[in-house]
Image (cartoon, chains in turn cyan, blue):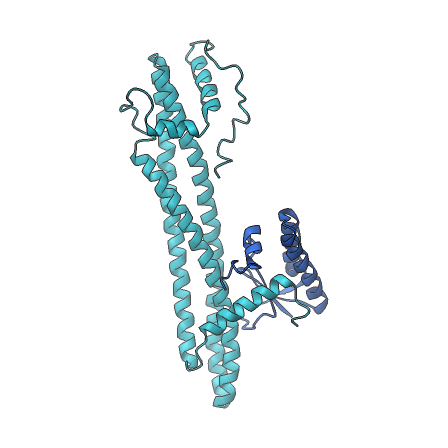
Length: 259
Length: 92
């Protein structure tokens, strides 16, 4: 069949076969291979639990950020009403940043949900196959001589092994994604700890590190727009200092570039 | 022949259907070689579709090995490209 198969599937098939060969121990008894299948199933369950945990953590972070967005908005209004435009601008910059992070978090949570759904499907498929293997093994043992049974059960075990390799890969990819998200979640937590979304009372003269970072995010145009809007809402009229030539672009999608 | 879509399960395909799958498979690889991401996704989608609609889904309780294995539906272009430089979905 090798000459007929497509290049991609040939490579994949060869790799899966290699994985199976590596996993195979000629000395192992057939009952042991059932034992190993059950262990693989436990691993999948653990993998699903890890994804659920990561999803919960991101979800909690998202709700904290949601609160920050509301809080910073309020602070911006208060600052503006008190005539402190500089402080209002800072609050809005931070709000913008929190919103961008929030969008990206929401997307990650959705991605983890889809990973979780897929893993649950895979777990179910593997569980069914293992159960079928257990039954078939007993039937074969009862019907054939020991040597013949050995061959037939090995064949069936290969079918389960392929499923295990498949699920194993799906889990590995889920774990990799979760790790990436964990790293990002930690980065956001550090920013939170540094007071990026909360602490406006400690702002001294000039810009601190966080402000410089925020400025680099290039949210300036959108912040100016929002500041103008807020001023209008507060009945402060059109700002005389409003920058005329800012290209606001699409105000609705600040998170796109970061997602 | 039995074809597995990783992460989805196995399908039983006629030889004709397999020939079509292999053509699309090669088209997907050609797209990777040409560094054409859109063409890759197009060919790969079509490939998966040909398996899903052209084959008969195997029950989960069947214990057959696959003759052909194709990567999961959410394979990225980068992953597909890596597959042929020794650093893809499945490490060498």
